[in-house]
Length: 408
Ligand code: CS2
Ligand code: MG
Image (cartoon, rainbow, N blue to C red; front, side, top):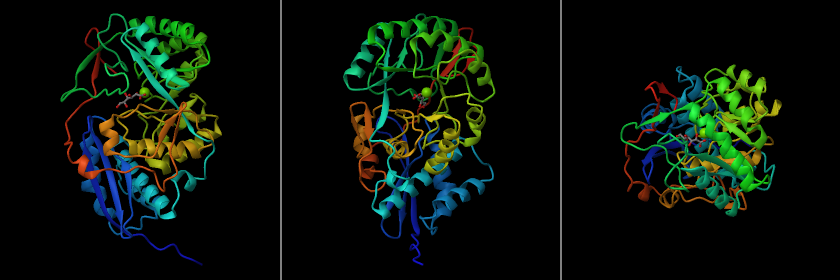
């Protein structure tokens, strides 16, 4: 019986670069001269993952057989003892993704072929229209529609609030990490709940019904507030309403689900199947947003997607600018291969980021296509990456108008 030759890992190097925002990339090299990449970026906590990989994981990888993706995953997960959490699972994700990249390159095929082949021709994505005012947001939505997007997320300023999630000066690149120390935003749920239904009423009047509209409440509501917003938005037929509540308590979605038929999406901050098992098994959500980069890589995200498929829950992977083109490329191969793919988030990266991470994926007519290069179809220009040293940056924090800390 032919035995696949072993492929000893010879190096596992962490590359931290900041082409406009910080990215952490793991590069695993093998004795055959091949290498694979994994995204290890955790917005606002990048160096924690960089150290977890460089100081605690990399030494234990040298000499292992790069083909043994699942065994290495189990070694890193069970061997950590202190399992789960965003730092650990982002580090494991980077190793897993890099090993899948290597295996596909060694097999001479794009990763989606190794994952079972394509279930569709392309990966439909949604863009991000945002504006300080309702009018500006709708104008931006028209621009995204004219660019070919068939699904668009709307985030608008809230009258009476100086700032809110998802609204940025730069209309193509939304980067929330904005300072060497956390900036403090002020939040009012009542002002937000008053404004949001008006945004979607105006959006449907201006854009019609052919376009899929989405919205991200970004963890800020209580379950009953989420239920009310879901009901208020029902006439506007959203594709999904995302992150209504902080999903620490999965059972809280029972209350939301009882009151509204607006489809619910959650999970970009999830890092393991245990964070969403109840949500999926009780069909409390419609889309699971966990990402290759933060939920343990391709291997673990496939487990989540397979569980979700049993309960008619679809995938809707996170794809913000703080997930690098390495993660986006991996997501596209994953999305193409999963039968219960729903929709992929696509926040474009800047030109300087794309120059550091040359990639094969392309946008056309509302979808992304990963291309057919062997592996992920993405690389890192290490010389260019070295020109952008790490720059500490934090996500903002949020306080209510009376000063009480709340979720950003
Ligand atoms: C957002 C993100 O893309 C989304 O749905 O929730 O912009 C999120 O705020 C950032 O990824 C956090 O780093
Ligand atoms: Mg979100």
